[in-house]
Length: 111
Image (tube, rainbow, N blue to C red; front, side):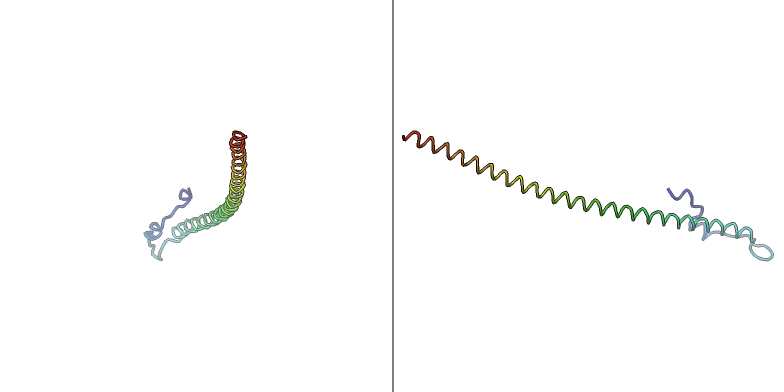
């Protein structure tokens, strides 16, 4: 993704040989190479800033999603409790109806 805009690898920098003139290295060649190094460092810095912003955004999204999960879990627990209470109530009502029917059947036969 970012590598297509990077000209130099650490190996390229390490193995770079400049031709030597009578007075030393050719200044134009050194300047050209250093310009490439500067462009790469600028690109690296830009990439770092971009990635830091992306990390910040993703962290914020992650925190929002964690809050939402907590909220949904709380709602689920409340719903489960409500359903359990309703089930118990229905079960108790059903039991009372059944007892009533049994009493009618038992007492109805005796009378």
